[in-house]
Every structure is written in structure tokens, then in C-alpha cells.
Image (tube, rainbow, N blue to C red; front, side, top):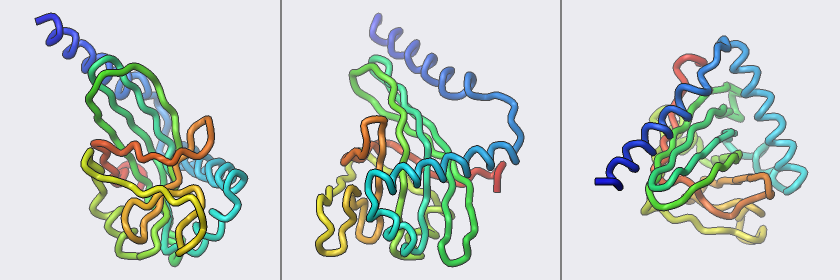
Amino acid sequence: MRINYLFKTTIFLLLFILTVLPAYSENAEEKRADIQKMKTETLNELYKKEPKARKHVQNARGYAVFSNFGLKIFLAGGGKGSGVAINNGTKKNTYMKMVEVQAGLGIGVKKFRQVWVFENISDFNHFINSGWELGGQGTAAAKLDDEGGSFQGAISVKPGVWLYQMTEDGLALELTGKGTKYYQDKGLN
């Protein structure tokens, strides 16, 4: 009974922190400007830490940049974030959101940024139009060198789709996408 109460309280607090507290009044134009600033800062940080990433991003069919915040309290965790996907051919920006849900024992807060790189336009279009869900059964292969077309410092999510994930400690060769959904931000597009 006590664990059930603790679980429900944790879920309530988590949802409150992730939805109510960040809801400040900022108009769509300001939000887009903030996301563009975050995109530029994230890409500059990535290129500083991994100079070869610049070529990969510029030569890709499209890419997406996200800033994410995650919180884990006891038995439940979650996260949310926002970002922008850019079609390198048309230069069109598509503003997006992400949410994440996870279960398991733990406590902590994690801020991280992600740069998705799409070699195929079909994968990019699917990402922005249908959204993506990453589940706990998915695996990712870390690529530590630039042989065979792999990206230095990135992980392969699937053939032709790469992910750079940066934390305050630098590049992370891990995928934190358990129960993660990426989708268009209808209020900004």
C-alpha cells in the first residue's frame, strides 16, 4: 500500500514539474528565436568537440537539434524537450517537441542536447511528419572511428540515421530514448 502511494505521489510530482512549472508566457516568435539560438549554440559546441561532425551535418539530407531535460524520482522518470528539424535541401525549419517516460529505481536530473543526422530524405520526412518513438527494446551501435562511413562520436540509431548526444560532460555514447516520442510542435509551425 505504501509503495502504491509513493508511486502515485512520484508520478504526480513528476508531471507537475514537467508540465506546470515550465509553462511561462512566451509567444511563438520568442520560442522559435530561443530554439534557433539553442540550435546554433548546440551545433557550435558539437563542432568544437567533434570537428568532423560539421561535414556530416552539412552533407546530410536533414538534421534535427533538441534540448532536453529529464527528471527521475524514485520509481518513475520522464523528460521533455524542444527542437527544430532542418531539411538541408529546402532549408525549411520544422519545430518539434519530445517527451520521455521511463520506469525503474533512481533519482536525478539530466540536461542534454541531441543532434540527429539523416542521410536519407525518407527517414528525415518520417521523423518530422509521423514522429518517432524509441522504446526500451531498441539498441544502438556506438561508432568510435570514421571508417566505413560511421560518424566519429555518434551512435547509429538505424542505417542512415545518426545521433550525437551531449551532456555537460561532453559527448555521450549512449541512447537515452526509452519511451521517447518526437513530434511536430503545432503551435510553432
